[in-house]
Image (cartoon, rainbow, N blue to C red; front, top):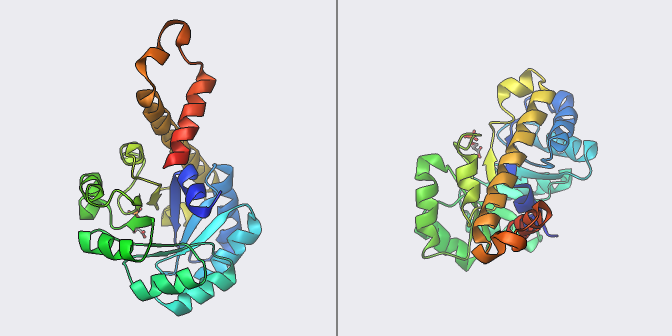
Amino acid sequence: MNINETISNIGVVPVIKLNHPERDAAPLARALCAGGVPVAEVTFRAAGAATAIKLMAEACPEMLVGAGTVLTTQQVDEALAAGAKFIVTPGLDPDLVKYCQSKNLPIYPGCTTPTDYHTAYKLGLEVLKFFPAEQSGGLAKIKAMSAPFPMFKVMPTGGISLKNLSEYISAPMIAACGGSYMVTAELIDGQKWDEITRLCRKSRDIVEAARLGNAVREAPRADMEGDNAPTSGQFMEKSTTTADKI
Ligand code: 3PG
């Protein structure tokens, strides 16, 4: 499974800013993994982001730790040296995209306009960050952008919460949703690891329920009735197939 598929299967990407990586990175990584969310975008907005990436990856080797708010090739190098497996940028910088591509490092640049999407298409990208999602027009805009650009899967970030996660993740072009709602400064500063795990589990439940709902809606009606009614195992199979497709 490649990185795009792994992120898509998880369905949510915590956006993390750590002020005390030595204290918080390892327990936070363990809390996310315990909640079924073994992925993180660690933003370079905080000094010590590279240290946080390194400590999280060491604490949970199975975890996919990436770098966010990356603005320069120097930060890409720093992130890579720390063990980052992917790069997220707030906007679309073709030079930075090409730099990551030359290193076979997945990059998800923030794109919200037809011009951004067109440039991303020329760069051969397949998955984009849609940032800031709610402030840029939300799901309605993402859907409108998919008409001329059906080739992209997107990761909306900015304004996603437990309230709108289901709506976003149910849309077929959404690969995963990014957000800080499960890793707020308050939760991290208060070292509320159990609460972070609970919010991650809840998020995964929402993702799975939405995908299960899509799978059921996609199932042919005749299969749903009488002796042909699928068992819950078959629902899960259809849901997984759907999840694999997006
Ligand atoms: C980001 O850093 O990508 C977003 O600002 C996160 O947005 P949120 O805090 O609204 O989830």
